[in-house]
Length: 229
Ligand code: DX5
Ligand code: ZN
Image (cartoon, rainbow, N blue to C red; front, side, top):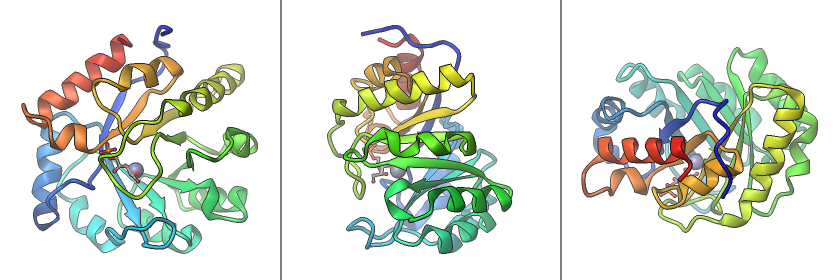
């Protein structure tokens, strides 16, 4: 396993998927106090993925609960329709799936024109070359390390070659793009993802089901990512 590139800042982003939706504001406060860097909103429309989660009004109602940034992971069939709603609701970063739009360059530009940061997401079966020509538009590349739709799935090490490839492009271009990994991230998988080149990590079950609570979970993930082992 290689060494972690010390250039990019490690960030831990809890997914809201395992949270208690009956008290979401309190849950976000707890995550912020536990050291979360961002909140990762898993937006699912029941079509792009076989699961259905929250609408923009829920994000709006939670925005005042915490100060940390919100990122929306749009697992939806119509991101051009929904992205503006999540920006309006208070999301700072909108991540589109390559697989969900016919005109990725145009969709990403729309997000930028609305004043938000843009990210692009790849499912496990999607070749990394599909995003090469939009790297100049994005602040973040999200490599899915599970098939999207559910939390608690097993991390797919096969995705690490994609992380390495994107990292090599970023280093070549000298750009400040974050590489985020999402799915099956835990204390036993985060080191290999970080050594492959990722610096931002989504975690749901590893944070919410940690026996010593979210603060210990987030600290453990961060330490392991920083050390790369
Ligand atoms: C899956 C979501 C992930 C998931 C992460 O479609 O995008 O964010 O909730 O959950 P864990 O960390 O449990 O794999
Ligand atoms: Zn996600």
